[in-house]
Image: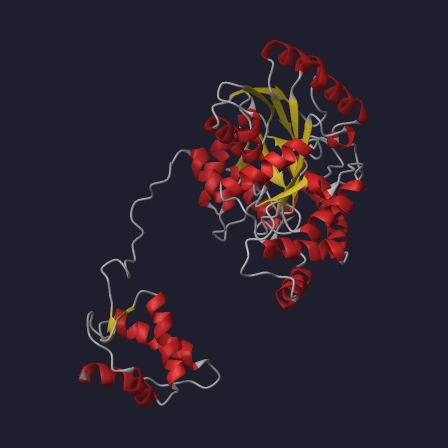
Length: 470
């Protein structure tokens, strides 16, 4: 015990720093370096208070934090003991158990912030986000008396948010009562819930190609058979689409109607009409993923505006507001909305009312609309610059002026997207090869560039260096 007392009495405090954190930091060092041996008993709280000349409450807080870090354990009636397990301070990470093929490695790099440049990312740069407005909404929500921290919240979602979404949807021509709007934790959860309700093992589902890379995996888990229709910057061949539908009779077609990821295409009024007509004639349901719609410069028609009897609409805020704000929603027919709420409760998919109130605050005070207007203008300007240097590098850009978050880019002849992506990781440049998004034979000739992350001289210079190193 004398050794422990000497180590603790030697703690020196620096002015201007919280006492609790200084105690935790210095005792952590003493434990990791062996000054306080594993299993040794610490002096009682009163004695610790006297040795460090601090209040008992400060000692209690420090012990709580050390316990949370796994450095101290308490034993009823006996006191506190140093706990230094053999794994607590292990510095090597061990073998990487994740798949090491190029697509898997690139997929993880696209999603994880490692400090690398990420022109292949699927979301806005942090510097583009409305940080002050978000913090204001967070502070306002935490101060509000309406936040029920001890409750689960409403299964369908926070009612004022759904009312704000109803108003937002009305501007798109989608007129629905709040009862047909169901919030979800993210769009993937919304899609997954809909797959459980609409798709049985063995059913055929039609996807755009290219499409978001998780869709094939998700549908495989549901036992669905997947067929694809080629979609480019000019859309898709409607005759080929009808031939596929007639031959395979899918139960569902899942699509980005607006600002398709990654080509940027949006369906025209004539295309929307034809798709809706075919969905009725051939009896398939349409899931309209409108996650990028708020980044659209000029509004185009939504499939759900034609009715929700055979269309379900999904959108959210992860691509426009913050990737960490996983608030999304589905707009459904009355029977399907009721079934989704029941399923949401049954599988524990209750959503965070805290996050929903923050989004609601930004929708209601107009800050979200101001942010998206600024972002749309910024994307338009950045897109021109990024498209210019890509074409100067010998790449083909799908359309100009490009609208939305992505530029679908064809590489110069002789280059392979996966090879470039793998080499890019060596210079901290994370690219998104076409094979990440498409199963088409020529997918290896394409890269998806995120406009916000690519309007950067470092990205341009490193990409040019990759092309020159062939």
